Image (cartoon, rainbow, N blue to C red; front, side):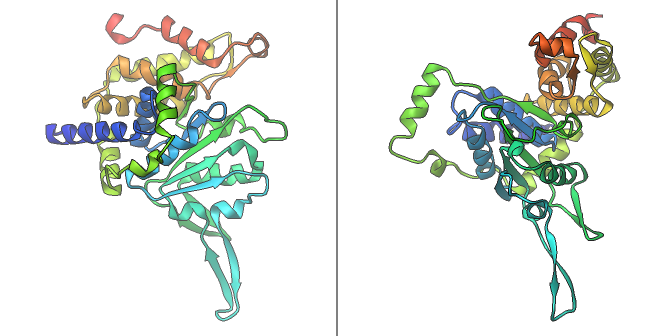
Length: 319
């Protein structure tokens, strides 16, 4: 990769993070990981308690990245046709006319509280996420490029909700938690919302063309065969672990490599190192493994198992 391109991408990502940081205070690591997922052209699942800024983060991204942004509030009455569109009969033309859904005209879609809509609607959205197209009445319609979904869910008041099946969770590149802010950050958040709307100060930092160029640059980042082998070793360890029923799939391994490339680019490098892989591994894979019933009953978290795997598998540089 040319040094000029590398420097341009690095400066752009720094400006994006700084702009979003005006609204999402004290969560630079989360902003960093979300931006990695955008560069890797992957979908993001924000799984956390209400009120910690999941929706605010998505809105700030839409304003800052110069992408066509839309939001859908996922409730039980949202239909698949609201997502993918539908056909209506046109009497004048004596034929059916396709009416686009919300995803046909957006680059960045916030699916708020995705676990509160029906399984049919979830399936319609997740199919579009995987294929980047929708088919209605036998006709295929391409989605905008890029097409990225930021979905939020929380486990509080989850009675009657439709949790995403394990196979569909795999569609998301990363699962992140925002978490509560520290005391100083929370004080600044409260102060900043007394007399003005913080979103009003947000400006568009990059254009759609710039985002696509950065995604292309991410694909150009170099990853050595030894590090590809390291990712494979981690995935195989998750499959053979006595704590898991299902380990990381090849799709998960590919996702780790893509996120590691984005991590390298955000650090101003055009090559992946072992720290990039270790930094993204748990966020990319925590929703891709299924623990045994014994581990679930004991309250073990998937991240704990993944951290144990990172400890047990030596990266190439220390072999």
